[in-house]
Image (cartoon, each protein chain N blue to C red):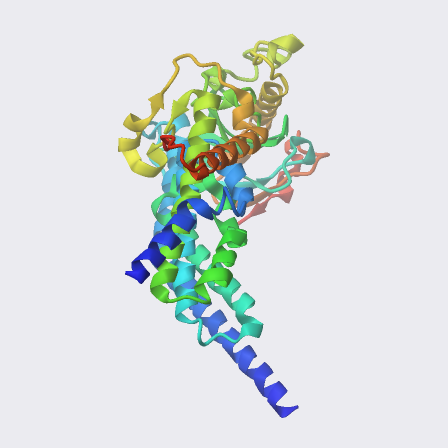
Length: 225
Length: 230
């Protein structure tokens, strides 16, 4: 029973209370750079999710054998190897998406959220808990990427899931939703300032929701975004 | 003292062990994917080339029938450019040059410029650019038909004064809010055509590994002796 509660806490932390992007504010470089469309966000989100899960599991498995003095280089080595393997696999199976995401796939190595999870969680907890932590942290990060991508794409280009064929093949052409026909586009949303403003808005919305929830007595229905 | 060095050695061994394991992981992944990645690169390139010169027009393998050219500095390209050649029954059909327009609004615009053997343009496509989204990116064929305006053009069509954007007195449209981008593309395409016309025989010569041109002598063919035959 108590372990179940513990896993629920890990999941909630990763998805919401300690969200990598919204609360820890880590990994902002890729977050801000690639989220101009939903598909870009999803692509980088999945790659980051895979990396954090694999690195968490490996770090947790070897946690008793690594001497504290060399643990950071060892973690970096593990993360770099995992990312390189994912990069190769991605260019083999999702070549066009890989071309779009470009440099940001190898740059996952420098996403401090991943080293952060290895150091703060995986090196101190069981393999199973680290797996759950990696999954929920990764999904939490990916969700923010997707929501921010959707926000910017809808505002900036008036579409959703544009270029979905990069990820889903021919099926993807049917997935693109045009929200507004003949939309002239809102340039700011696509440019880097749009990313900062969008992320700021998301953080504000999260904080507002948390505040409302913590108000005792007053039961306010919370619509999840 | 001894225990300190012992612990250093242990750490070093541990690190090398992880380095070896990590390298092994990458090596195994590479071994399992490199063929597929090479195929992807080839398919991607051929798909781009075939947008300009349809498969029906040639029967050679453009991926292999390619040469590297070192262009003079005024073309703005520092690295050697690749030229893919289309042939049918051994006769030259078209050359597709990978040129670079160095003076875009935000840096280089990489182009594919396809020229038929008679000097008319088969088409132009943008491979890579960092122009402003929503303004300069109308040079992409997915976003507007502007780039198709080059189809069928040649050095004499329009004449030299027509190879500019309309704002500069030429025949090519600029975009609302973006003149620099189309100006750079028009200039680069024109220069590519000039190069094609003066070096046509050279561009289609088989089995040339590298063609060197110097800024002083690029416009006459006397520098052919410098080109290295493979």
